[in-house]
Structure formats: structure tokens, C-alpha cells
Amino acid sequence: MPDLIRTHGVTRVVFAYSDVSHEYVMHRACLTMAAGADFWLLGPGQTMLKSRKPVISVCAVRTGCGKSQTSQKIVKILRERGKSVAAVRHPMPYGNLTQQKVQRFGHLDDLAQQHCTIEEMEEYEPYLEMGASIFAGLDYGAILERAEADADIILWDGGNNDFPFYVPDLEIVVVDPHRAGHELAYFPGEVNFRRAQVIVINKLDTARPEDVKTLETHIAAVNPSALIVRALSPVRVLQPESIRGKRVIVVEDGPTLTHGEMKFGAGTVAARQYGAREILDPRPWIAGSLKDTFKKYPGIGRLIPAMGYSPEQVRDLELTLNASDCDLIIIGTPIDLTRVVRLNKPSVRVKYTLEEIGEPNLETVLQPFMK
Image (cartoon, rainbow, N blue to C red; front, side, top):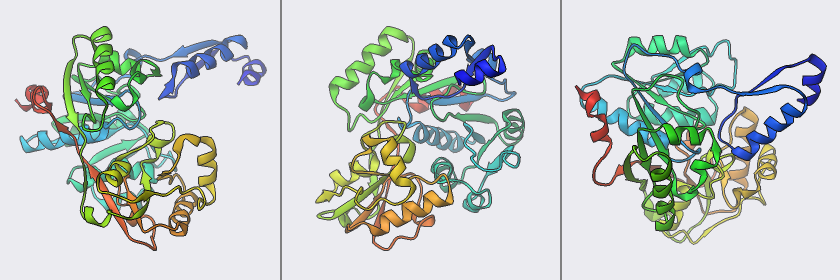
């Protein structure tokens, strides 16, 4: 970047990435300024589009907080009250960006037809399984026009913990007690944390009380007017007895383990809860591009991220799982992985939902949208 700045006389560098530490951002700022250019951060006021329909946004402070399960619960509540909802996902395409200007997913077949990566499927498939549609793509003005024509209410399902692309009438932000403190240490997660009208403290069923207390202290310090919703994130397995006593390989949501820096996910919780004998270290069997993933993110440990940004990565994931010497594969990623890879050994799928504790709950905060 410094070479490009000097060679081309660049005067302005705009930072356009998310879910990174404040230290990372400021190092890039210093690198830019040392080369003589300005360093810019674009704010919500300059980047949000205004909708003709009511907008609910669901964002988070880090990847893997439980934003998607919160979004899906909101869609379920509103649809049960007779409201039509169009969910719009933060941009994710990795393929032909010209063809992916506006995407609408209404059926599972659409995922294959639009050549979705595993990461995209992880976000879209749960909506399709509940009979809802979801929009994505590149042109968020054109996407908004399509979504407004489809629905009474727009739900912004924010990815990578960026702030919303649409002006929200209700701004909900999910925090994770397993990473207490990150809400004030990552960009732009802290922006979301400070803007939130409603903060959902998720995963209370697996969190340490002292970490929950840290979150509550930070909320009181920087956003005391936010309404706090407390929630559990219970896991469910169709055949939990199949886990007991088994030597297992656990596959978790990819971004949560990699740049999200989580040390475990729903698959790990299920393995412990239902009595797996051992979670095997997959590293003796990892193939191809997965080796690069483990090298870049050594904190992954004894888990496998569901990497699938390309056909080659999907193949490497399949080779790794089939080569492993385990009794059972626990699939903790949100999609039915067996639709994507062919496994030569038994597997179980783990699902997880959001369950609020007491009041206020999501029904409470959504009351103005029911009228």
C-alpha cells in the first residue's frame, strides 16, 4: 500500500473492512499517514439508504455472537403476526459480481443455481428451511427496491458486524459473553454497541457469570439507555444418543472460528453435553487448502472450520473428514453439510436457536411493528 500511495500520488485511503481490532485499524492508519495520505472511515450517516418500509436491523459486536438466530427468530415472530418480512443479508458474493447484482433466495435449489459458497449457505439456508426468503447481492439500492416490493417490513441481517446499510427504525445488537470486552475493542463492533437501541446478551446457558457482569458494566458505561434482552442458545441434536461414548470430529461455522476467534461452537457444546468420549484433533488428516487455514489461524485447535469459498476448498474439507479416524462427525455449522460433501462415516447435525429469558424479550421490542 505505501508503494501504491507514492507511485500514484494517492491522497486518500478509505478503510472498508470490518470485524478487526482497533489496534489493526490504527496500524493501517499509521501506515497510510506515514506514506503521506489521509486515512478515512465512512460513517453510518454517509452510507445508509432510507427505505419506504419500516426497517429492523440485527447486527453484532463480533462474528459468531448469534445474530442470525436472532434475525430468524424475529422473522418467525413477525410472520406469525401476519406481517410479510424481507430479510436482506450483508454482502457475501464471491463469484461473478456482475451477475450477483440482486439475488433472491426462496428455495434450497436457488443455492446451487447461484453457485453459493458454504459461507453463503450458512447464512441463507436457515431462512429457506423456515419457509422465508432472503435477499443478497451487490447493489443495495436495487436490492432494497425489490425487497420493498415483496414485504411490509425489511429486516437487515448484518454480516461481519458492520453497521446497517439501511436506516433502521429499530437497531438490535447481539453481544457474546464468551468474548466479553471485545465489544469495546473491535471495529466497527463498538459502533454497533454504542448505537444499539436493544442489546441481546446471548449464550447465557454456557457463559461465566463474571463475563456477563463485564458486559453489563460496559453497557451501563457507554450505552445505558439500551434495552437489554437476555437469551439462551440451546443446542439440539436429532439423535443425541449417537454421540455418547464416541470419538468425534467436530465441524464448526468457518468465520466464527477463523477471524471470529471463537474457541468452540455449537458442535463442541453438543459433544460435551451428550457425552462424546473424545474430540479428536483433525490436524493429522487435514488436506490441501485447509493446511493454509490452520497455519493462518492457529487458534482453531481441535476443530474443523467449514471452509468452502471454492470447489477446491469443499473438496479439501471432504477429503479431510473422510480421512479422519473417528466414529462420528458432529456438524455444528448452520447448514446440512451432507448436501455439499459426501461423507464415508456417520454424522449428526446440531441446530441452535435463540430463547429469551423473561422480559423484555423480542416480542416486547417488536410490538410497534405488529400494528
